[in-house]
Image (cartoon, rainbow, N blue to C red; front, side):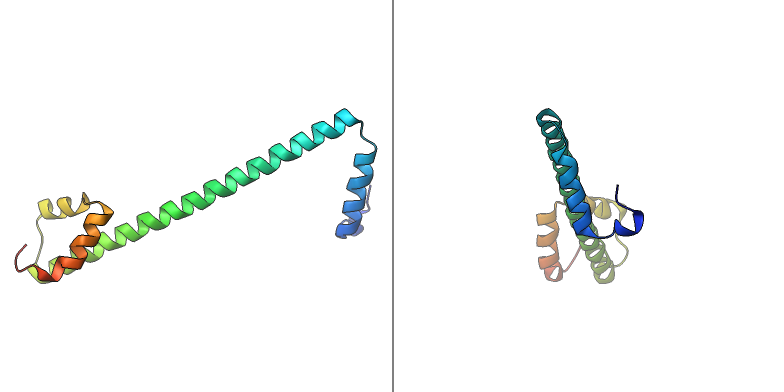
Length: 110
């Protein structure tokens, strides 16, 4: 056991881990390696899930902002929009929103 003040020294921790492994039987060492592999696989899966969640959240946020901007611009150009028009815009896909945004100023009526 490493005294607590010395545990901050990475080299001592590494040496202690090597020494502990040296005292394991082959079966114990294989089991330890399997547990470590499982642990690292789980950590990788969690990190991947977090990254996918961030990406999805960013995409949803961008799409929401796009919808809000289009609605504000339409309101400014044509006055208060009906609930039906707002609902139709809410149902547009991302490519449809992008196309609407690009052609928005070509409209002369809602």
